[in-house]
Figure (cartoon, rainbow, N blue to C red):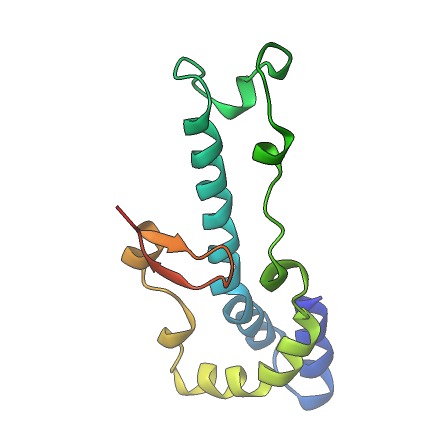
Amino acid sequence: MTIATCIELALPNNIKISEAMKAYELLRYNRTVATMKIGEQVRDVLISSFHSNLQRWHKIDLSVLPIDDDKLRLPHNPWIVDFDAEKYARERFFGVIEDIRKGNIDHYKYPRHVIDNAWVNLDTGEVTEKKI
């Protein structure tokens, strides 16, 4: 939805498609990082909760384990599933385009060290330093 909205807003306003694609990337980047980190966190929790000789989630034979279905249920956080990507893009697109043209885009992306050491609050989507 975000990519379609960016193109829809770009065309009648004489904004280059390349700028619209950059805006698309910047509008989605941090949310995408956060949702992917949640996937890693969920995977790590699920793997660690199983018998130690089961090396990988994809190789688990569920028929031989006593499984509590609630422990396998993946989180469906409202900040992910109830997010209105079109509204978000419409509200921010022209500001992002302005920042692209000014070369002021660093604040749209988490720095690499934050991504590598990120911990995502499952309730809010807030990205913080990994909890150790």
